[in-house]
Structure formats: structure tokens, C-alpha cells
Image (tube, rainbow, N blue to C red):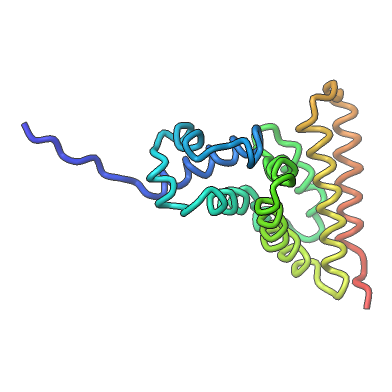
Amino acid sequence: MTTLPRKRDAAATRARILEAAQRAFSETGYSHTGIREIAALAGTSSTMLLRYFGSKAGLFEAALAAAMPVATALSHPREALGKGLAEALLDPANAIRPPLMIAMASGDPEAAAISARVFEAQSVAPLAAWLGGPDGRARSLEIAMLATGLVSYLRQLPLPAASEAERRHIADWFAKSVQAIVDQTPQQ
């Protein structure tokens, strides 16, 4: 009996590797995460992982970029960005890994440089362009700072859980704060 070779699904393999890398880099950090560990989490070999991404740095860059779906946030109508962003960031089904990946990579110069480059390209620049005006980048950074703080304090730090009333209050504050930045008249 002849066994047919198993057909490979490159897109599925790549997605599994990126998911495993995001989990590992956000839990143990860039310096303490190895290629073999990520490959094992993804159910593949380190050779296959390197074939897709070239190096640990290449994998980190791709994983971080994939974890920043800014286009999804910018698909909301302009007048609803604050509310939509609050809902997305506070949705427990939505894994928010970039802040941890970036923070845990800051001790490694190569990973910190990758983090800065990817954050600028995937988050700050698209949001700045969407906001428009010469102060678009500054306003984009304001929103990024608010979002990072929200995620850090309500989703990632092991603080005592906020009550439902507290979460609603904070979500409302965040949505209004972001919307105020969006609605500002661009400075000349």
C-alpha cells in the first residue's frame, strides 16, 4: 500500500508559528525564548521555522507586526473610533500581546530596535495618516499611550479584577479620551 505524502499548508504553518512566537515572546521575552521552543509550541521543526523567517529576529519582527491589526481598528467610522477601540482592547477573546512583547524585548538592543521600527510602521504611522494634519503623529502617539496603559492595567497586570462598574467607567473614559483626540482640529 502506497502512502501519499502529506500536503503542506504553508499559510497554516506560518500562522501557527506566528501565534506560538507571539505567545512565547509575550510570556518569556525575546532574550529568554528560543527558536526550538517556539517550533515545539507550533508543532513544527526549527528548520521549518527558520525557512519561513530566517532568524529569531526575523520571526520576532513578523510576529510583532502580525499582532498589531491597526487596519481593523481604523475600519471603524471616525466618529466611533474611541468606542470601537475600547471594545476591542477590553474583549477577553482578543489576545493583546504587543505591549508585553515590546516591554520584554527592551533589554535586547536588536529586539528593541525591531520593536520601535515595527511599532512606528504598523501602528503609529497608519494612525497618524488616518488622523491627518501635521500633528497626526503626536495625536497617534497619544492614543497609543492611552491604549498601552489601558491594556497593561486592565488586561496584563495581575491586579485585583475590576468590578463590572469599574470596567464600564474606565472603558467609557478611554473611549471619550480617544475620541477627543480623534476629533481635535489638526494643528497647523
